[in-house]
Length: 441
Ligand code: XLS
Ligand code: NI
Ligand code: NI
Image 1 (tube, rainbow, N blue to C red):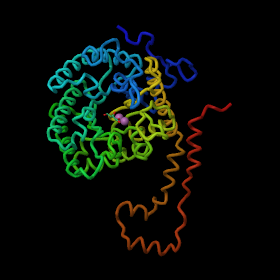
Image 2 (spheres, rainbow, N blue to C red):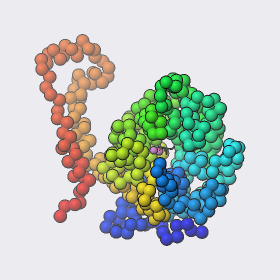
Image 3 (cartoon, rainbow, N blue to C red):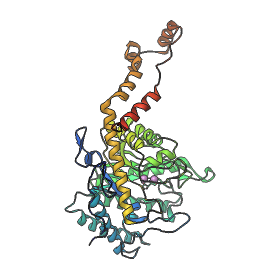
Image 4 (spheres, protein in one colour):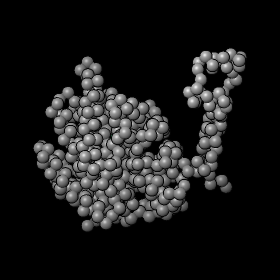
C-alpha cells in the first residue's frame, strides 16, 4: 500500500531539468575523486522531523497531516510511520535513517511498556529493512521532552531521573545495535543550566561523564563497534549548554577519558548559534581526529534559534564538503536534521525538501572536489607558511629551540619584515570562479 501515491521514484535528470521531482546534481553513481557520490554522501532521514513533526510551533498547531491515515499516539500510527519512512527513503534513494526512541513509538506511562513497544516496532523495522539497502545511521534517546528531564538527564539534580536516563540509553543502544546503527548520539539539550544560583556545574559535568562511560561499557558489551557522538549546541532549550561547541565538547571528552570512543556530530545550525561558521566546527573536529558525522541543515542569520532549514546554501555546502574530503570522509553520514517551513505542509513538500538538501550537498561535493583539483587555494595556504620551511622554522616545529635563541635571532634581524599578504579577496574570487565555472557565454 502506497502512502505517497502521487510521487514515483526520484530520478536524476541533470542540471537542465525543470522537473521539481528530479535530482539536478545528485547522481548517485557518478564518480568524484575516485568514489561514487552515494559513498561520499551517506544521506540519512531524520525520523523526528520527517515523520513526526507536523508544524506545531510556539504560536500555532500542526499544519501538516502526519497521521498517515491512522490515529496518532497508537502503535498502528507508529507502524504507518515506518511504512511512510521506508517508502520515502526508497523513492529518494536514501540509505540511512536516524531516530530518537520516542520518535518510533508513543511513550507509555511505564517504561517497561515503552520498551515493549520499542521491541515490537524494531522487529517491524527489521522486517522492512530486508530486501533494501536501508540501515540505521545513528540512534539516540530523547532525554529532553519528558517533563522529568526539566533539569537535564545526566546533569539532573534527581538521582531517580538519572536512572531513567540510563534506562533509556540502554534501550536506545539495544535498538541501535539491532538496526545495524553506525553511531549513537548524545545531544545534551537540557544538559546545562539557567542560573548558577541553583547549579553545581562540576557535579553535573562529572555525572554526565559517568553516564557516558556507562553507555560506552554497555554498548561495547553488546557488540556496538560504532562511534559515540556528542552533538554540540550552545543554547536552546537551555540558556547555557555544556556542549557549547566542538572545542568545548572535545575538551570535555579528553578531561573525562572518553575521547577514544566519541567523535563529534556537527550540526550546521548549532555551529552558527555558537557564533562560529559551520566550517569552523568541522575543522576543529577534524584536526582533533573527531569529525564523525554531520547534521545537515542551515540556520537563518537573522534569527537567533535553531531553525533547522533544509540546506540550500551552496557556498556553505561546498565549504563543508571541502572539510569532509580533506578528512577522508566520515565514519557517520549526513543526517537531514531539517524540517519543512510550517507553510510547506504537503507530502510533495517533504520530497522537494529532501531533493533540495541532497542536490545542495551533491553540488557542494562536486565544487569542493573542483577546488581541490584546481589547487590554487591549497597552494596558497602552503605558500603562506613557506617561511617555516627554512632551518629556523623546522627547529621550532621540532621543539629544538629556546626563547634565548629566538631572541638572539630577532635582535639580528633588527626589524622583521611584514608577513606575506593574506590575499582573502583573491581567494574569494578563486572560490567564486570555481563555483560558477560554466556560466561564460
Ligand atoms: C536539536 C538537535 C537534535 C539532535 C538529536 O537541536 O539537533 O535534533 O540532533 O537529539
Ligand atoms: Ni538542532
Ligand atoms: Ni541535530
